[in-house]
Length: 345
Ligand code: C2E
Ligand code: CA
Ligand code: CA
Image 1 (cartoon, protein in one colour):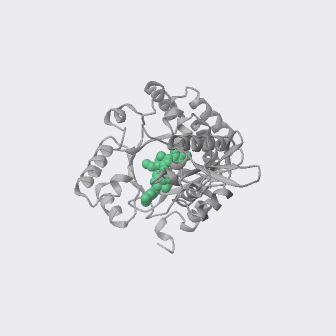
Image 2: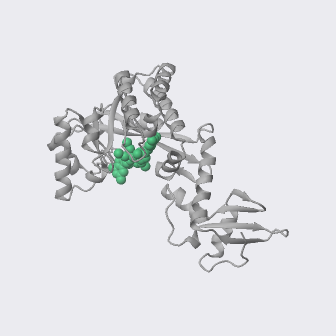
Image 3: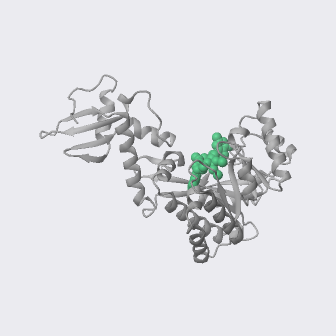
């Protein structure tokens, strides 16, 4: 790796100064690799790294010469990806122990009477350098490199404690996103059982959201885990129903109680085809006696449409965005169980 001594024309002096202030992530001999300012801004403002229009603008390698002068070099796309992955995995190893992962909760309400009856737990990573990261910025890497199990068990433990600490009569169900890889691990149900005992939480007050994905290598083991979790009393939900890999054969085999209608349908209801699809999904769910939850509800016309179809519950920015767990329970208290009782609604 030979450092170049002149800056490529696309980077301003200002950019370079900020590159200098970033942190070394991997040492390659005497040279330290730095993430560029652009990368950090994209991470912190939008919650995820985005492909840059031009590779020349993203990663830099800085070479500290004996005089302390700087020079830099453009990294190739593949190198850049590899380094980002290394950095993320490396940081993730200590993220749980350092308390950097945060549980956010987003309310779920009944459509017929606006009662807050549940919340979905959504993870965030308060990264020391990149700021608050949305799951899309790190989960795919964590999952790909086999670290999702640690995250899921941590999340389950946190959610069980939250569930346990609630008081009747306003107790709500908490839904947790799981990876198919969790279900493929034969020891997963047993680990969940241990967590239940440790925390004193009730499985019947927790729901597990599962998305079928290409990552599924052992469907039989997944099915066995799901059956065991159902026996333990958990509610099981198929997330993102109607997209990607979820299929009718999946639905017929899995011991699920709930269907979550994917946000991509709900946000496109101005299109008559999308409306027909949502109608069909609701019909299917009702026929199979499943609870139907629509996600991504952003306005009241969508809510009225869903009510007309007989959809049971909804979740979305119309009610509230995901909030840190502490804020969520303050919000819940202020609502006294019904989201339309809030002064701002
Ligand atoms: P998801 O399970 O489909 O979660 C719903 C996503 O939609 C969340 O994004 C939520 O913030 C967003 N959302 C909710 N209502 C609205 C709305 O009205 N409008 C719009 N535009 N968006 C809305 P988020 O938190 O970024 O999560 C993205 C995905 O990451 C989740 O999709 C889920 O698949 C995954 N995920 C999140 N937390 C976890 C976790 O703890 N474990 C696992 N395995 N996956 C997780
Ligand atoms: Ca979900
Ligand atoms: Ca979903």
